[in-house]
Image (cartoon, rainbow, N blue to C red):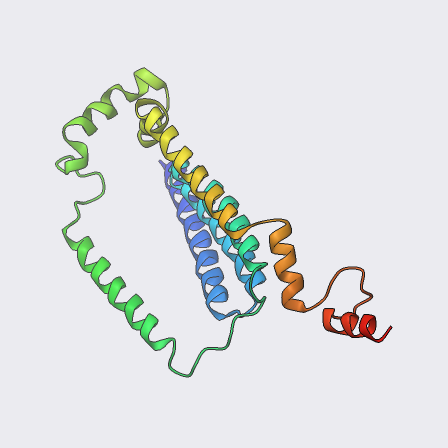
Length: 214
């Protein structure tokens, strides 16, 4: 009994630590103006979130968060950053007041919606009735996986999950093509800076003037 309680306390401390890290990273993202640092912190936020999902036994969600949030999204944002400036413009005095009010209103509505949710582990809840109850009864015998959600997504609904993965991959590929990673991004970055490689630090206009003078 003592070992069980110590295990529960340890898991609770890990949850608190991970949630605290997420809170600190979120505040840093909101306060920073450097886009590169924001993108990197967003990747860290996704990785910490994936770790937390593993702790709460949501391994399937952790895989998705790590692949999409920390992987593909970070690559797409880094590619998009090549087509724009590296630092965000300073906000006006009351520019953040509107988004803050929207966030507060959304949080209040979400908290209000949780009042009608069933208690954790309630046997009379909709999730624990019908087909959900059937999956919980046959899951271990069919798959040997303790997490029912993971076995449903990877086994019982495996083809559906494969289709969703394909859609996410195609969406990322389409975004990459639209942004024009590679030569187009490099050319846009050079154009924005007004310099060409191999021009010894001289701008395009300066090089053109020297050629006209010669």
